[in-house]
Amino acid sequence: MIKVALCGTIGSGKSTVCQAFEQLGVAVYISDDRAKLLMTHSPELIAAIKGAFGEECYSNGQINRQYLASKVFSNTESRLTLNSIVHPAVCRDFVQWAERQYSDYVIVESAILFESGLDKVVDRVIAVVAPKHLCIERAMARDGSSEKQVEARMAVQMSAEQLVERADYVINNIDLQSLYSQVASIDRDLRL
Image (tube, rainbow, N blue to C red; front, side):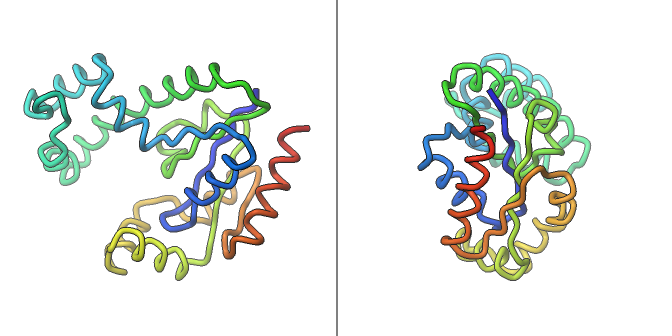
C-alpha cells in the first residue's frame, strides 16, 4: 500500500482536498485530530507530557490546553520538547492505522509534514497550494482571524514554494471544478 502525505499552507484548502479524496473511497488520516485524540487517550503520551510539563497539564482526564499553551507557545525549547513527544507518537499511530486499511493507497494530512517527521514514513507527497490572498481570505473566514494573525501563522510555516519543491504532486486549489479534476488525475496515477 502506498502512503501519501498531503500538506499545504494555512488556507490552502487541505480539508477540501481530503474530502475530495474521501469521496473517491480513499482513507484519510487527519494528523491534527489524531494528535489531539492521542494526547487525551494514550497513557504513554499522557505520562510523557505530564513528565515534561507537570501534572497540571491534565484535569479530569482532559488536557488543560490553556495551561499547556502557556508553557509551550512562549518558549521555543518547551515547544520543541512537546513536539518531540507528540510527533513521534503521531507517526507511529499513522503507520499502525495505515496497516489496518484496505486500499491501494492512504493519505495522511499534515500542516507540518516535514517539521513533524511524517515525511519519513510516506512514499509520496501532495502539496496543496493557492494564491496567498486566497489563503488569507479562507483562513480569516474559517477561523475569524484577522489578516495580521493569519500572516503571522503563515510566517512560521514552510512556504508554498518550499512545499512544491518537495512534492511529487501539486494541487492548485483555486476553484472546486479544477480541484476535483486534479484530485481525480492523482487518484488514477496512484491506483496504477
